[in-house]
Image (cartoon, rainbow, N blue to C red; front, top):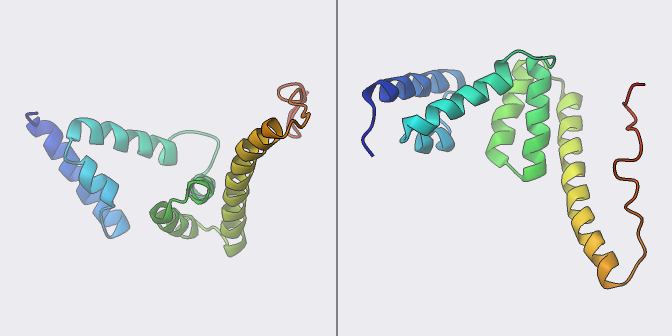
Length: 141
């Protein structure tokens, strides 16, 4: 595929910006920048998610990223987002709670799949009717 010189220039500027901000360029960015046509939109989405308009402040967004990275086992993401959260004012306890939430969700996901199958194999009667029938604890009338 022939590279668009304008896209290449934009991708290079993005890479320089990432290096200034992080002190290094993550592997994902290094590899994806080889395809500026995909890399630029990916970076724009990332910027919108972490820095765009919305109700969550930057620190909270970083804490959410830590939870998600913990849930999926994203070692490198945890490192980057933890530092960003701390730089944004997150406390040690806020970071630990974020990690704990992500780990709990990952464990619950594994249990949900495994225990549903377990119940099926061993003929246990389970009630899945609660899904969608109850208001969440945070729901407002």
